[in-house]
Amino acid sequence: MRGHMDPGGREGCPDTGRWVAVACGLVTELEAAPLLDHAGNCASCAEKLRGAILTVADETDSPEEEFFKSLGTSQPDWRRDIARRLAADRPR
Ligand SMILES: [Zn+2]
Picture 1: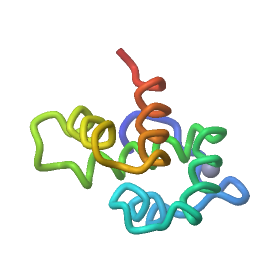
Picture 2: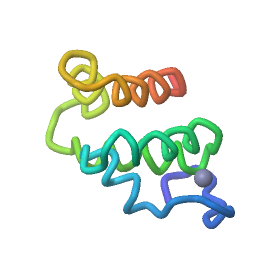
Picture 3: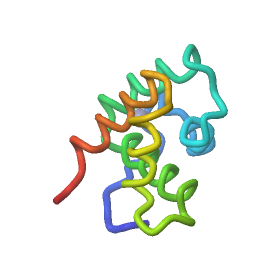
């Protein structure tokens, strides 16, 4: 728990492992598209995806910044799209 609501188990929600795979870039764009679409409409899953990204990027000083930076330069469009969504959603 990170102080955020997690209803857990809303119908049709992918499990956390899926979000880790997305964050790691282990899924194809075809697989990721519906997941990202879901995350765009599901606060719980958006939070899981964000957590997965933070976990994956754990070794950098500012994980999200680094992740977004890498997305902005050399990643396919769909990953930039995640970055945009999460960045837009970021608390300031
Ligand atoms: Zn969900």
